[in-house]
Image (cartoon, rainbow, N blue to C red; front, side, top):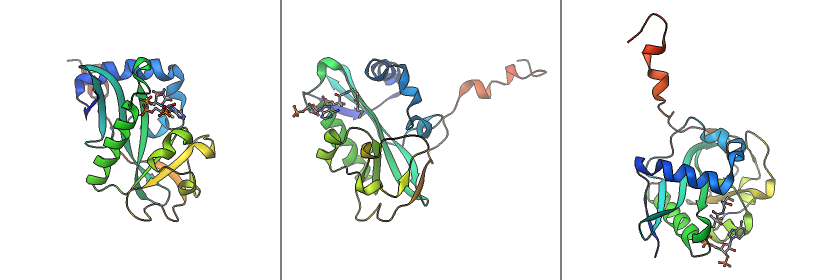
Length: 182
Ligand SMILES: CC(C)(COP(=O)(O)OP(=O)(O)OC[C@H]1O[C@@H](n2cnc3c(N)ncnc32)[C@H](O)[C@@H]1OP(=O)(O)O)[C@@H](O)C(=O)NCCC(=O)NCCS
Protein backbone atom coordinates (compact mmCIF):
# COMPACT_ATOMS: atom_id res chain seq x y z
CA UNK A 1 0.00 0.00 0.00
CA UNK A 2 1.22 3.49 -0.85
CA UNK A 3 0.88 6.50 1.44
CA UNK A 4 1.20 9.93 -0.18
CA UNK A 5 1.87 12.75 2.28
CA UNK A 6 3.29 16.25 2.29
CA UNK A 7 7.05 16.38 2.30
CA UNK A 8 8.78 17.46 5.53
CA UNK A 9 12.31 18.95 5.88
CA UNK A 10 13.67 15.60 7.15
CA UNK A 11 12.79 14.04 3.76
CA UNK A 12 15.35 16.16 1.89
CA UNK A 13 18.21 13.63 2.10
CA UNK A 14 16.10 10.67 0.94
CA UNK A 15 14.54 12.79 -1.80
CA UNK A 16 17.86 14.00 -3.21
CA UNK A 17 19.37 10.48 -3.08
CA UNK A 18 16.34 9.10 -4.95
CA UNK A 19 16.58 11.85 -7.59
CA UNK A 20 20.32 11.13 -8.03
CA UNK A 21 19.58 7.44 -8.56
CA UNK A 22 16.68 8.14 -10.95
CA UNK A 23 18.24 10.87 -13.10
CA UNK A 24 21.98 11.00 -12.34
CA UNK A 25 24.00 14.21 -12.16
CA UNK A 26 22.59 15.38 -15.52
CA UNK A 27 19.39 16.23 -13.67
CA UNK A 28 20.85 19.63 -12.84
CA UNK A 29 21.32 20.38 -16.55
CA UNK A 30 17.65 19.95 -17.47
CA UNK A 31 15.85 23.01 -18.79
CA UNK A 32 13.22 22.64 -16.04
CA UNK A 33 15.98 23.05 -13.47
CA UNK A 34 16.39 26.66 -14.64
CA UNK A 35 12.88 27.27 -13.31
CA UNK A 36 13.55 25.44 -10.02
CA UNK A 37 17.08 26.52 -9.12
CA UNK A 38 17.15 28.82 -6.11
CA UNK A 39 13.37 28.65 -5.64
CA UNK A 40 11.09 26.99 -3.12
CA UNK A 41 8.42 24.58 -4.32
CA UNK A 42 4.82 25.81 -4.28
CA UNK A 43 3.33 25.91 -0.78
CA UNK A 44 1.65 22.60 0.13
CA UNK A 45 2.70 20.98 -3.15
CA UNK A 46 5.78 18.91 -2.28
CA UNK A 47 4.93 15.26 -1.77
CA UNK A 48 6.54 12.07 -0.53
CA UNK A 49 5.32 8.53 -1.12
CA UNK A 50 5.92 5.84 1.49
CA UNK A 51 5.52 2.10 1.36
CA UNK A 52 5.89 0.22 4.65
CA UNK A 53 7.44 3.32 6.22
CA UNK A 54 10.09 3.57 3.46
CA UNK A 55 10.49 6.71 1.31
CA UNK A 56 9.84 5.45 -2.26
CA UNK A 57 8.66 8.45 -4.27
CA UNK A 58 8.88 12.20 -4.66
CA UNK A 59 6.93 14.84 -6.56
CA UNK A 60 7.03 18.61 -6.29
CA UNK A 61 5.33 21.53 -8.07
CA UNK A 62 6.78 24.99 -8.72
CA UNK A 63 5.29 28.42 -9.38
CA UNK A 64 5.82 29.73 -12.90
CA UNK A 65 4.34 32.35 -15.18
CA UNK A 66 3.22 30.66 -18.38
CA UNK A 67 4.01 33.26 -21.01
CA UNK A 68 2.04 36.47 -20.61
CA UNK A 69 2.27 36.49 -16.81
CA UNK A 70 -0.35 33.77 -16.49
CA UNK A 71 0.08 31.88 -13.20
CA UNK A 72 0.72 28.16 -13.51
CA UNK A 73 2.50 25.32 -11.77
CA UNK A 74 5.37 23.27 -13.18
CA UNK A 75 5.27 19.59 -12.20
CA UNK A 76 8.46 17.69 -11.46
CA UNK A 77 10.71 16.07 -10.81
CA UNK A 78 8.73 12.86 -10.31
CA UNK A 79 10.68 9.77 -9.32
CA UNK A 80 9.92 6.39 -7.79
CA UNK A 81 12.48 3.89 -6.44
CA UNK A 82 13.25 1.30 -9.10
CA UNK A 83 12.04 -1.65 -7.01
CA UNK A 84 8.75 0.13 -6.24
CA UNK A 85 7.83 1.02 -9.85
CA UNK A 86 4.78 -0.19 -11.77
CA UNK A 87 2.81 -0.50 -8.54
CA UNK A 88 0.88 2.75 -8.81
CA UNK A 89 3.20 4.94 -6.72
CA UNK A 90 3.83 7.46 -9.51
CA UNK A 91 0.12 7.65 -10.32
CA UNK A 92 -0.77 8.10 -6.65
CA UNK A 93 1.70 10.99 -6.38
CA UNK A 94 0.38 12.71 -9.51
CA UNK A 95 -3.28 12.23 -8.62
CA UNK A 96 -2.75 13.50 -5.07
CA UNK A 97 -0.69 16.40 -6.40
CA UNK A 98 -3.24 17.46 -9.00
CA UNK A 99 -6.09 17.15 -6.49
CA UNK A 100 -4.21 19.32 -4.01
CA UNK A 101 -3.30 21.85 -6.71
CA UNK A 102 -6.93 22.17 -7.78
CA UNK A 103 -8.09 22.45 -4.17
CA UNK A 104 -5.55 25.23 -3.58
CA UNK A 105 -7.02 27.10 -6.55
CA UNK A 106 -4.30 26.58 -9.15
CA UNK A 107 -5.62 26.64 -12.71
CA UNK A 108 -2.91 25.09 -14.85
CA UNK A 109 0.05 22.71 -14.71
CA UNK A 110 2.86 22.33 -17.23
CA UNK A 111 5.71 19.80 -17.38
CA UNK A 112 8.41 18.36 -19.58
CA UNK A 113 8.15 14.57 -19.62
CA UNK A 114 7.15 11.44 -21.46
CA UNK A 115 3.75 12.02 -23.09
CA UNK A 116 2.87 8.30 -23.10
CA UNK A 117 3.03 8.40 -19.29
CA UNK A 118 1.49 11.80 -18.57
CA UNK A 119 -1.34 11.66 -21.12
CA UNK A 120 -3.24 9.28 -18.83
CA UNK A 121 -3.60 12.17 -16.36
CA UNK A 122 -4.90 14.53 -19.08
CA UNK A 123 -1.66 16.31 -20.06
CA UNK A 124 -1.44 17.34 -23.73
CA UNK A 125 1.18 18.99 -25.92
CA UNK A 126 -1.48 21.14 -27.66
CA UNK A 127 -1.98 23.18 -24.47
CA UNK A 128 1.61 24.52 -24.52
CA UNK A 129 1.87 25.28 -28.25
CA UNK A 130 2.25 29.05 -27.73
CA UNK A 131 4.73 28.72 -24.87
CA UNK A 132 8.53 28.53 -24.83
CA UNK A 133 10.79 27.17 -22.10
CA UNK A 134 14.02 28.98 -21.10
CA UNK A 135 16.15 26.31 -22.80
CA UNK A 136 15.90 23.38 -25.18
CA UNK A 137 12.93 20.99 -24.89
CA UNK A 138 11.37 18.51 -27.28
CA UNK A 139 7.96 19.96 -28.17
CA UNK A 140 6.31 16.54 -27.91
CA UNK A 141 7.45 16.33 -24.26
CA UNK A 142 6.29 19.86 -23.31
CA UNK A 143 2.82 19.21 -21.91
CA UNK A 144 0.07 21.10 -20.12
CA UNK A 145 -3.10 20.41 -18.17
CA UNK A 146 -5.90 22.87 -17.42
CA UNK A 147 -7.34 22.41 -13.92
CA UNK A 148 -9.65 25.38 -14.52
CA UNK A 149 -11.41 25.83 -17.87
CA UNK A 150 -9.25 27.61 -20.50
CA UNK A 151 -6.52 28.36 -17.94
CA UNK A 152 -3.91 27.96 -20.69
CA UNK A 153 -6.07 29.04 -23.65
CA UNK A 154 -4.10 31.44 -25.84
CA UNK A 155 -1.08 31.41 -23.50
CA UNK A 156 1.94 32.73 -25.39
CA UNK A 157 5.53 33.54 -24.56
CA UNK A 158 8.31 32.45 -22.25
CA UNK A 159 7.77 30.39 -19.10
CA UNK A 160 9.44 32.14 -16.14
CA UNK A 161 10.08 31.16 -12.51
CA UNK A 162 7.90 33.06 -10.04
CA UNK A 163 8.30 31.00 -6.86
CA UNK A 164 9.67 32.30 -3.59
CA UNK A 165 13.47 32.54 -3.52
CA UNK A 166 15.02 29.79 -1.37
CA UNK A 167 16.92 30.94 1.72
CA UNK A 168 20.60 30.05 1.47
CA UNK A 169 22.24 30.12 4.93
CA UNK A 170 25.73 30.89 3.53
CA UNK A 171 24.42 34.01 1.82
CA UNK A 172 23.36 35.38 5.20
CA UNK A 173 26.59 34.41 6.98
CA UNK A 174 28.05 37.85 7.77
CA UNK A 175 31.16 36.25 9.33
CA UNK A 176 32.35 35.66 5.74
CA UNK A 177 32.21 39.35 4.92
CA UNK A 178 35.67 41.01 5.35
CA UNK A 179 35.68 43.27 8.38
CA UNK A 180 32.56 41.64 9.83
CA UNK A 181 34.13 38.65 11.58
CA UNK A 182 31.79 37.03 14.09
C1 LIG B 1 8.04 7.43 -14.41
C2 LIG B 1 7.90 6.85 -13.00
C3 LIG B 1 7.84 7.96 -12.00
C4 LIG B 1 6.61 6.03 -12.95
O1 LIG B 1 6.42 5.61 -11.61
P1 LIG B 1 5.57 4.29 -11.29
O2 LIG B 1 5.32 4.22 -9.84
O3 LIG B 1 6.21 3.12 -11.93
O4 LIG B 1 4.22 4.64 -12.07
P2 LIG B 1 2.85 3.86 -12.05
O5 LIG B 1 2.97 2.59 -11.28
O6 LIG B 1 1.80 4.81 -11.62
O7 LIG B 1 2.61 3.57 -13.59
C5 LIG B 1 3.29 2.53 -14.20
C6 LIG B 1 2.86 2.46 -15.64
O8 LIG B 1 3.45 3.57 -16.34
C7 LIG B 1 4.25 3.09 -17.39
N1 LIG B 1 5.37 3.99 -17.54
C8 LIG B 1 6.35 4.23 -16.65
N2 LIG B 1 7.24 5.10 -17.17
C9 LIG B 1 6.77 5.42 -18.40
C10 LIG B 1 7.25 6.25 -19.42
N3 LIG B 1 8.37 6.96 -19.26
N4 LIG B 1 6.52 6.33 -20.56
C11 LIG B 1 5.39 5.62 -20.71
N5 LIG B 1 4.89 4.79 -19.78
C12 LIG B 1 5.59 4.70 -18.64
C13 LIG B 1 4.66 1.70 -16.93
O9 LIG B 1 5.04 0.90 -18.04
C14 LIG B 1 3.38 1.20 -16.30
O10 LIG B 1 2.46 0.84 -17.30
P3 LIG B 1 1.23 -0.16 -16.98
O11 LIG B 1 0.35 0.54 -15.98
O12 LIG B 1 0.58 -0.32 -18.30
O13 LIG B 1 1.86 -1.38 -16.44
C15 LIG B 1 9.09 5.91 -12.67
O14 LIG B 1 9.22 4.96 -13.70
C16 LIG B 1 10.42 6.63 -12.51
O15 LIG B 1 10.75 7.08 -11.42
N6 LIG B 1 11.19 6.70 -13.57
C17 LIG B 1 12.51 7.35 -13.53
C18 LIG B 1 12.38 8.86 -13.42
C19 LIG B 1 11.49 9.42 -14.49
O16 LIG B 1 11.59 9.07 -15.68
N7 LIG B 1 10.60 10.35 -14.07
C20 LIG B 1 9.61 10.95 -14.92
C21 LIG B 1 10.19 12.05 -15.72
S1 LIG B 1 9.39 12.12 -17.30
